[in-house]
Length: 86
Image (cartoon, rainbow, N blue to C red; front, side):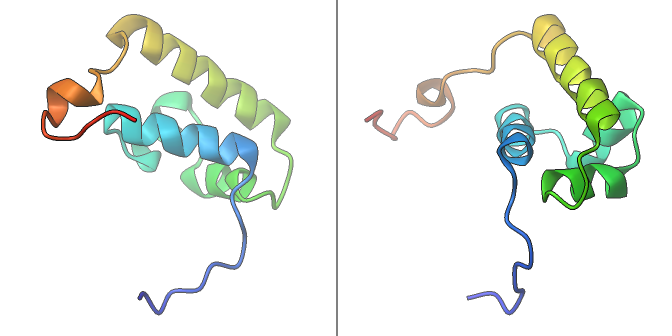
């Protein structure tokens, strides 16, 4: 187990960003840079420290644009053929 303790749980929006990050293999720092926001501010919004309404709009716009230009990620079956879908 890790010795790191979690002080704040992720919000629903924060989990959406984390899922996007994992789906496309892009870091939170890259997401923040490309969305034009500070990474520390984005992290604070992800854990619910402050609402960040404008920040969410910028990041959501970046995510939508990224998914539109890059397309859907490959299904897990093509990445990991030995893993069975449930």
